[in-house]
Image (cartoon, rainbow over all chains, first blue to last red):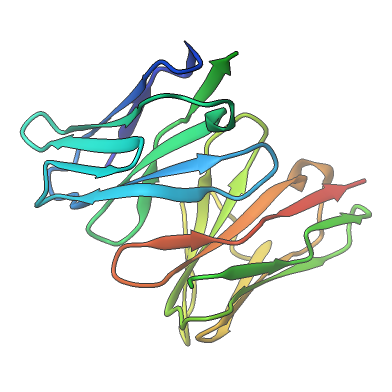
Length: 111
Length: 114
């Protein structure tokens, strides 16, 4: 079945710097790749997503890139701020409409 | 738009009792809802997929007789944890699919079994 690997598990960056989180997937039929942000004790919030017919998508300080050939996608956060501190999950949309989740990345923004 | 509510937000129950958790899509109809469990510092684990009007599909290793799921309408799915034990203590989150791809999550239910 589909498998999603996410790296790194923890990422610490200086406020104002950029953060990049990478995920790889195994099923070439996967066609939708969302990113969720989860703060402690709260629900995951969809922050950006990309479909397989697009290579890049940007929303203000957040961008996602997709390389279908290599089967990997990345989340880019520029000009990081303290409120960006959270756990970020990538996911891959399997053909049976389930989301296959990465293990999560704890992002720490140092002041 | 795409708001999902979940009730209760937290519950404490005694071992051996049952607990029901409700998940509602407030401003859209959800033909499919998903139930997840999340242990501290871990990713979301899909427990089951719930389709309106049909039986839920459970993931491998999830006991369907212990975790009863009912999806009686396009806006409501319920998860009942029967004969709860301390190892069932966890954060339970539902999600509802609004369109072909996007899933929106409820706020979660913190279950503690004593």
